[in-house]
Length: 209
Length: 209
Image 1: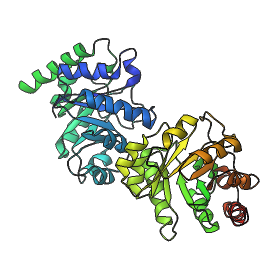
Image 2: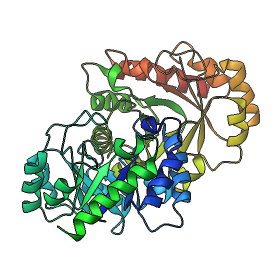
Image 3: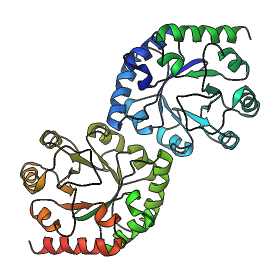
């Protein structure tokens, strides 16, 4: 899972549907889609997840559900992304079984150390830079913090927070495997074009470091 | 499952802990405990549910989780209570298996008719009377609505909404199998005493209708 990792935000998609944004981002080559619906009812989240999962039937890109293991199980998602206020990782693994993807946000150095012992598939380094789409985080890691986590952790790293085409290469160079974006795709009028530039930026960088 | 059905509200418990309220209500003879935590993080809800489940190890009373099938699975609860905005009942049954309890709130006559075909264990008739602890409901059923559901439905009925020791007998006479209360137990200084009066009221009524 290397490349651009789309995290959705229905609110940011505005007049565009969430499915349109996801489809356009997939067409441009994103490597992962995470559905994040913090203000939805369970019913609404499940219905959205089932629609998006159906729309991803023909692509070999994982669908990840933010926080809600019940929604992930209900829609047959490929995994979940959990934060430090979500289901504990050990319980999440127990409920999801050995094959599902579990991503875990790390928001402090203690989180990074604790994650070393956990059966998770990647760490979400959150946030790398200040971001308006997530305001409940403690530490802004910066490129130095990201590099420090890269040197220490045994897990792949998905960087998130304030990332765009202008800083994506620096973030990859600092040690991220993937660049997660919310507003840089969802908040644009042309999600395909925005995702394409991001994918090209990162792929160029991966080929010629 | 006949008798007094406790639905928790951490906010109403105020200086008392939720576990204290649950323990006192169980000591007084409630027939079911439902944890409802609408404002908690997933982590907070799971931790509360694990604590309450552990405190109920020695009693033969089911623990039901409101809405969150992930939390129910994580804490080994006996079932879930779902509303019309929660996980669809068919998916909930699939995730929980055949043996767990599923309760479903009915808030319109269409809900009652649709529930007839669903593999659920009881209907929550919500609300019977106006209530300050749940403000997002559509229909106030009244005793007439409850009696109409009783005449139609194949499921046991748990009445909820504005119920207390003063109206519990009327609600049982109108067809409810159980009386669900939130504030009438959680909102009192003496949850044991409040639950005991409710249990006696309902049991007296069941013995001598």
